[in-house]
Amino acid sequence: MQISRRAEKIEPFYVMEVAKAASDLGRSVAHTDAPMVFLNIGEPDFTAAPLVQAAAQRAISLGHSQYTQATGLPALRERISDWYASRFGVNVPASRIVVTAGASAALQLACLALIDAGDEVLMPDPSYPCNRHFVSAADGRAVLIPTTAAQRFQLSADQVQAAWGPKTRGVLLASPSNPTGSSIDPDELRRIHAVVQAHGGVTMVDEIYLPLSFDAHYGQTALALDDSVISINSFSKYFNMTGWRLGWMVVSEALVPVIERLAQNLFICPSTIAQHAALACFEPESIALYETRRAEFKARRDYFVPALQSLGLDVPVAPDGAFYAWADCSAACARLGLKDSWDFSFAVMQQAHVAITPGRDFGTDLTAQFVRFSTASSMEQLHTAIARLRNMLA
Image 1 (cartoon, rainbow, N blue to C red):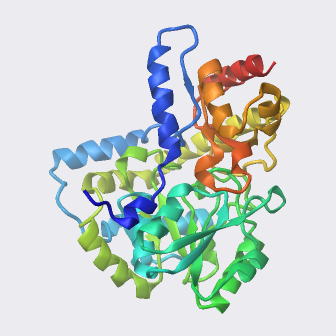
Image 2: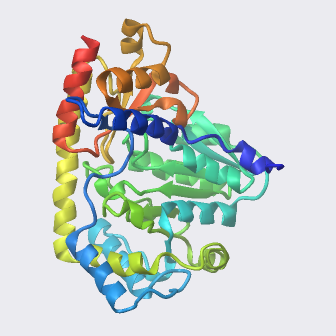
Image 3: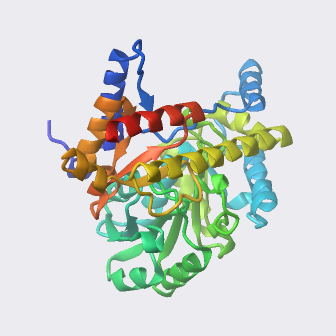
């Protein structure tokens, strides 16, 4: 069978490859005194809020399970609009909000709507691997630009200006970022957007971790810039609804009909049950619970990052959001006689029974010396992981 060139260009998602190996080993040690601790997947250990679960059950019992509009339930779009006003102080009309089958669908729709074959999209190295594959799936090309800790592993306006070429279509950023948990400084984002605008390009910002910001300076939506910014968001992370596959995007009024036409053909509509359930995300009781959980994520970061530093696993930029720690393992590799972060990740998995993610997925510049830890697990699990790492590295 002949496979399309498009499919051949998509690299394996090594996060999931490592996860499979960790799961296999995890089953073999599950009943030992050192079961596997999974710090490799960016999935909250919290589940959907009680009101959300009850809303889903109610929707099922009432038979509210037929197709919705391709752009989502009008009531849900209104709730999201109100949330932007109350949480971020920005006016985002519901008419500019399109509910999608997860943030992944939103990114796919944005890329298909805006990228032609051969177009180039600038993004930082390191960055979330699937984002560049969405560009590839639209027959575009992701151009990874190396970043440093000094710039918070985010692009600068000067880099965007220098890299812009005749085929450049725009930028795809993430703030906070996966894998680093670091955000773009709002002033730098403003300068980047100005460069993009001057070239007639498009600014796309993945903001799925934005509600999990721990620092008010960075916890600002790019939608405050102007109506041309495209923002991608999700119910997975802050709202703890990963498997419900529900997200949204905010686009200009002019782009809504284009996105709607694509969504009608590719997805018909997002999950109706998930949409009815998500209405309850914005109830005061649910928001209070999410804020309690956000504080717990911050407490985990405040414990785990200094603990990693004490083991010689340097985290050069403190994560200001999300639930990740991007740690330099080169010193540990040298001590253990290991080649790079890939070998280090498997050594940690096999010797310490802690699953982590090597940097390979996230780019090519210096990623061989970094690993990503997820702090989405319980504090107890984090303490166990640090104790095992300490024994391994002693």
